[in-house]
Image 1 (spheres, rainbow, N blue to C red):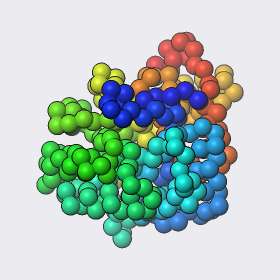
Image 2 (cartoon, rainbow, N blue to C red):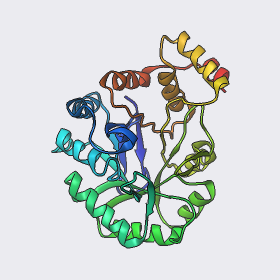
Image 3 (spheres, rainbow, N blue to C red):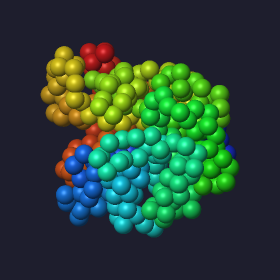
Amino acid sequence: MSTITIAPNSAHPLTVSRLGYGTMRLTGPEIWGEPANRPEALQILRTAVEAGVTFLDTADYYGQDVTNRLIREALFPYPSNLVICTKVGATRRSDKSWVPFNRPEQLRQSIENNLRTLGQEQIQLVHLRLMGPGPVPLDEQLGAMFELQREGKILHVGLSNVTRAELEAGLRLGPIATVENMYSYAQRTTVRLPHGANPGGEEVLDLCEQHQLPLIPFFSLVHALPKALDKIAEVARQHNATPAQINIAWLLHRSPWLLPIPGTSSLAHLRENLAAAVIQLSPADMAYLG
């Protein structure tokens, strides 16, 4: 499996597999509670790592600590080359709503909770998830993150769910290592969801390339735009693959700075996603897809 390097010009670069695994779907319905099949969830994590995946994406608000606990149960003590990336800046209420949790003391609380549930002394990469305009300015949120970095609790700081203007502002405030935004072949720009807007990856990709920031697409399986689906289905037929596999392959071919993290709660689908890493799309395929 090919690799990508996070913070390549820093004192502590991290080289990881170019195809990661996002753990969000390991939780129960609505990203809440325990998985329906806990043994399969644990086996998915073990199989991913055995297959060469060295980048896992999680958050303590996935199921309320569920994915962190699954990761620890399945993989601790962690392989030396495994990078576990988590997110802070949000939390879930008992009604399952998503709300900001981004005051400096809340960010510190989240980091301490992630360290405890993952069983780590330092988290190698933490994304600050932005939840739209609010009472806590970006410089105050990032200031708290950089303070935690200076204390050694975080190695690298990234941004998630950012607009182009927010990424530009973040880059002026300090060393940003990665960006995590919604991005797929069929969904490239801002999406309005019930819990807020999700800026698209296409809006920041050129900035990420310019600053050598891996862009980590989330929620990247095809789910919209019928005309786009027709094209991706045709390419899938030509490669004897599924549309989801071609979506992953398209991301891998779109830019060397993309690090997809397709998630699934099915061991069979995990194996299909991993197989997408070896699909070779031709220049003609990419031109047809657009």
